[in-house]
Picture 1 (cartoon, rainbow, N blue to C red):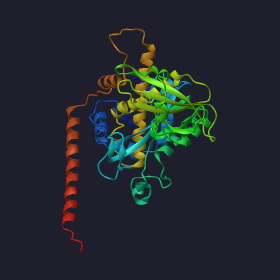
Picture 2: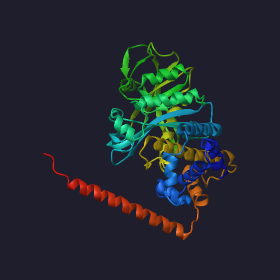
Picture 3: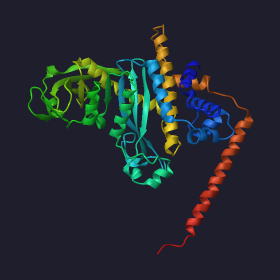
Picture 4: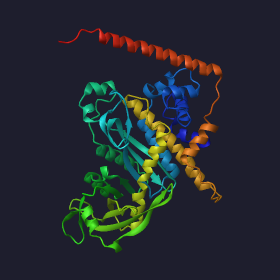
Length: 429
């Protein structure tokens, strides 16, 4: 509980009144509890509130700046696990939705489902260091169908000055914010959806931030000695056996993740910064499947370092997995400000778990191989059972049952009234 209070202290000053400050604390505790869903209803019931109205006001009407809290979350993370060799990781994730009114929702491709679905997509930036990894920034993606419809945007509370921005633009925007804040980081990595963006690469070169960005097999580079641009997969096919090195790309649930790796020095385009430009190639041992990375560093860098950074990209997938267990997935909010507030508080809850895990690993004095160090899911489970498992009288649960059923009765009556009205409208000719 000490670390929870320390984490919350970083944002407490953003709430000018004591009521939303207390509600925000209860909201965070609810995120770390074992409620079935992280809706305002369930969080309020767990907190002992008589109705969800206070939780809903926290996300919708209370006066506080979600972007300022986001910056505080980033500061908390860097203060706890910041490292000069830190890695910034970009990726997006989708949240499957029903209906059309939730901010950013439309039929679009999402990697969550692996196909086109009715979904909301958001771009995230994670920070990874030896102490751990967690999310430090977020942007919800608004398709053109939204930004071209002012009435729809207004209904979702989207500010009038918000314009269409691609996921690549959102990613560059987050990187600019973080690097302008002097976050200690030496590398950026991302999947091929972002690795092919030359604007992103040139911007990082200008700041002398190294990168290991995944690219498609059709990505064209000029190998040394100069022989003209060629596809990455064609270059890989011509490599001799001695060019491959078997190295681990980090540790997974089944141990070290070994792959075969090769690298090729490449010539940078005339409009890019001099330095060490490299095409990194990964070959899966089991079936020979290839993956490609466009790399740059201001100074010569060993192969093992590039491999380590490439392997770090999976950290953001872990953040999504653990973050969705505490509310990153299926936030039951529709409007612009509510989404940003909800997700920012989820990021803080995840950061608190990350810092607890980092400090537990650092302070661990025993090397008992029969027990692994505490993981984020295990810390959350203990938190839910030992800290947030509050006890309320029977009257509290009965009152909530009555409140839910009364609300559902009103909703049913309203739905039936709207349906009957539509049925009895005269048919259009």
